[in-house]
Amino acid sequence: MEQDPDPMDKVRVKYIAHWCGKPIDADNLVKGMKPALDALTEYGLIEDDNPEFVKGIEVEYHRVKHKNEIKMIMEVAEA
Image 1 (cartoon, one colour):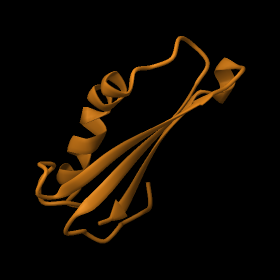
Image 2 (cartoon, rainbow, N blue to C red; image 1 turned 90 degrees about the vertical axis):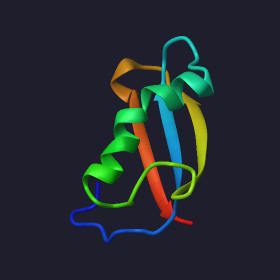
Image 3 (tube, helix red, strand yellow; image 1 turned 135 degrees about the vertical axis):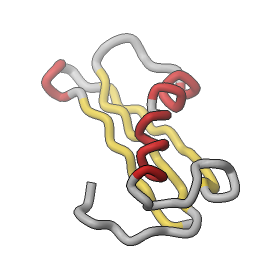
């Protein structure tokens, strides 16, 4: 996370999963990332996480070979 990002009016969110286990369904990935999306309002980046402010959520999935390569990236861009 950037330090002290400026508040945004409307955003688009992209979750990028790097995973080596059984593939993760996109809907389960989005559900599992709810606390991270909630944090955007807690930190004051957006006013609320409802569809008025979050204009889209995209999921990208990358298969990796080793557990040490597992990571989740949440990209937030102004819509």
